[in-house]
Image (cartoon, rainbow, N blue to C red; front, side):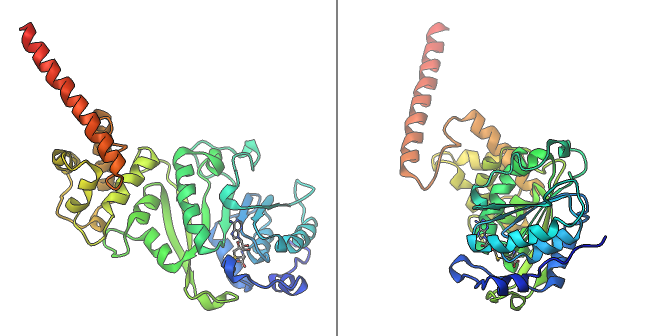
Amino acid sequence: MRFPPLPSPRDVVHLYKLQARKQLSQNFLLDMNLNRKIVNKAGKLAGCYVCEVGPGPGGITRAILEQGVEELIVIEKDPRFMPGLQLLAEAAKGIECGHANRMRIFQGDILRFNMENLFPQELKKDWKDDTPDIHIIGNLPFNVSTPLIIRWLEAISTQTGAWRYGRTPLTLTFQKEVAERMVASVLSKERCRLSIMCQYLCDVSLKFEIPGKAFVPPPEVDVGVVKFIPLKRPLIELPFPLVEKVVSHIFHTKRKLVKNCVPTLFPPNRPELTARMFEEADVSPDILARRLSVEEVGRLCHVYNKICQENPGIYEYNFRDPEYIELYRKRRSIELAKIEDQILHGEENT
Ligand SMILES: C[S@@+](CC[C@H](N)C(=O)[O-])C[C@H]1O[C@@H](n2cnc3c(N)ncnc32)[C@H](O)[C@@H]1O
């Protein structure tokens, strides 16, 4: 396919005198070979709808357009990039496609952006089908990309937002250490809460690394490009907040044995519930959390869910909040009083 000349990110930076803002953690990738490499890792984009987050001066944007996408939607917070993105959008109009405009630009914060109705309804696929012709790509600042992926994982678990259309894949950059934690296996010392949260919902792979010095200005760390493909069936079929709660307790201290982390899920006067967790889940209490497989964590979550359903107030119990501890004690004493009453009442009837 032939394309009209698209402005390069270097042209855009020079034309609009765009200085990266350190306070916004802006690090530009001006090397088109690297931008194309990121975009290639997303897979085949020709004829697809792509959403790019944080396009900045438009290096990745240009590489996406070069793929002959059906439509590119960009969401950028910093208004200084709008003229450069308009320039790219104008140039992209020359590329044949079904729209008057191949590129739609939104100025806004991705953390507040609703992707629920961003794409045509016809693209919708069943969750169990192949991935839809939609991709999310982005090189965001690290302080945005990590909280954002947690939100998006929750949206994947509820099949909302961009995942209302099916198993929309994502290709995103992260600080290298964070990327390594996301893909860390049972044997890795990098394995943590984030590894489980990513891996129970997605097939997650670290595609390649980019040295910090490739960016302008260079960050102090290297970068990892990570691809997420939502799984047809999550490895833990329970509500995201419940899984997150159990996982955050289990990985509370990475160097502790699980038997020392699980008890904080329960009030101190209920040690039998901790014992039940290990017994019913068939998990050894004497291993490090990072040695647990996603399946073992899943079994612990299922037992916790059962315990919560049988014991009102347990799910709300928060070992750090004295108010909950008091609330739990009150509920428990009411429950015990009821049981006592039933026993007495029952005895009177016999
Ligand atoms: C690390 S720079 C990368 C820019 C460009 N993608 C590149 O690779 O050269 C991150 C970009 O994300 C934008 N950004 C930061 N926070 C954002 C947010 N909350 N929503 C949307 N864009 C954001 C920044 O203004 C900046 O353009």
